[in-house]
Length: 411
Image 1: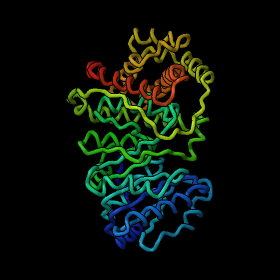
Image 2 (image 1 turned 90 degrees about the vertical axis):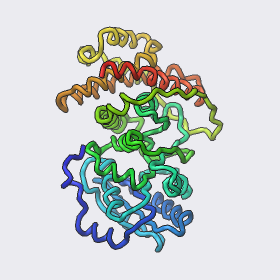
Image 3 (image 1 turned 45 degrees about the vertical axis):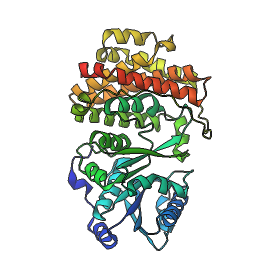
Image 4 (image 1 turned 180 degrees about the vertical axis):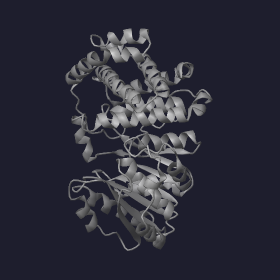
């Protein structure tokens, strides 16, 4: 988390550059790190989208780069926007990850008095000019403070979202945004000013859930949009979970639990959702299939679980630990009711954790259990189409909602 405000000040040179171009109506912030092969195309598409769909607005593209190990910087230097669009290129003003890049963009937005900020990753392969219009319009027309994309995804894509972040966020904050850590956003000035002053602003992968949770808990308007396929270069690294997915899981879950503690008053007093649940079918284009190796995941779960079983038993109630013991031989026993109670017990334990070592232990052990839950979900849905699998996930989210009083009782 960022706690030292001195670390996030813009340089005098950057402030001077901001003063020359302000005020800005629409700013697209592009997050870059090791993206030499994709960044030029992303920037050109953004450039075209801004020029085509917002001809009468004052526009800027802000490119911020983390610590790249390739020629990303050289590629960015080659990019020249249309003459009606301003360009700022800078290194991240803090070290850490994606959150540091977004913080850089928000500080520049503040310095340029920007009305709408769009955030885009520079490794997107499927980006189109119209995306800028679709995601920005709810902000431009004053209909929302945050736009979150809904991407067409395979049933095995979004593995952190589907079984953890979505049901948890929906239950605690009453926000039925299907992909709360989708990666791309549009933000109003009201929202980004709240974010940049927030004491829990993360500088890593936890930034996406932070943005969505703060918007929901602060009572701001959140909308979904941008119904499209998403292809990005980093998806290939999902096949090597230790490189991307595991670090992402730890950062996202840590941020999610920190925010639950911070906004405890909100979800404790939240009224029960009495809306009728309707399962609607999707008949959109089909996403690119995501391959998973269930047998390998089973082995991973079994090996890790047996190694840390004694640690898990100290965290969870005895009856839940006994149920977990059955999972290795019977994954159908790992039902969403059990999973919801496990997640809520971990959230409560995280609140009581005294130091970073205890928090890390909680996240590490929950990560192992999460693999077991994903295996159970994968086995249940292996012969299902996307719509059928989605109903399984929606039912799981309902169960998280129904068990919110359980969390209130143990928190």
